[in-house]
Amino acid sequence: MEIKKYDIPTELAAGFCHFLAGLVHAKKEVHIALSGGSTPKTVFNMLATDFQEGIDWQGVHLYWGDERCVPGDHAESNYKMATDHLISKIDIPKTNVHPIDGTNEPNVEAQRYAALLDQSLPKKNGIPCFDLLILGMGEDGHTVSIFPENSHLWHSHRFCEVARHPVSGQHRITFTGQVINNAATVTFLVTGAGKAVKVRQILQKKGDYRSYPAALVAPTSGRLFWFLDAEAASYLTF
Ligand code: 6PG
Image 1 (tube, rainbow, N blue to C red):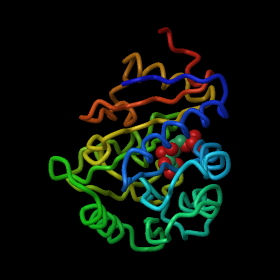
Image 2: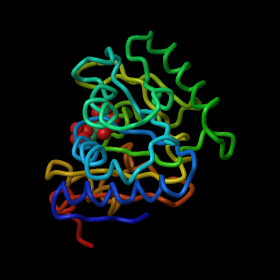
Image 3: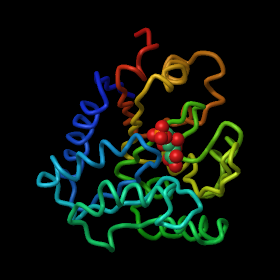
Image 4: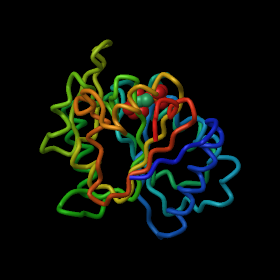
């Protein structure tokens, strides 16, 4: 596991773009799972502008590690966020973009998407193996849509599960732990002072860190990178 600290979010975004560009240049076909939320917007905007000429998107396949059960044009859709900030601005084949259908019945969609992963990705240990899995972390220590309140979903034998947001009750489709920890490379993009407590608890194994799903991310490949800005890293004592 490696921690990459940057002073400000835009410097983190530039560092991550270089990191991603290196992964894409290295392989003819690359399978990447995107995270939702707001943190990736700066990265997506930078990928779509400063780095577009440097990345050949023709061999890149995009998936989502989780999605809200809303239409793809809904303000809360992770697919909409990625489309607005990245996909609509790059030359990527439409057939390389694999959204979760937030309008499908959640259990049916979780099974459909799991089958898509099973059919589309190379396998490692019999489990779909992403080249890169981009994660965020909530202030409560959740990642993808596995919250402390439903952390049992992490251990599901399925590749995808239906989760519910603990406050809003919104249904979500989410990857489970076996897919996340089977990825060749996993990156966390975490910024802001609001995340600093959980970042320290998880990275320095303090308090009840084991109750936070983000603490369960430990890819068997060993290639786990935490991209942090100064605020998110501000409580770290190493
Ligand atoms: C989602 C995400 C979720 C997100 C964290 C951090 O659908 O919301 O996938 O896991 O990464 O909640 O979100 P922010 O980047 O908005 O802080």
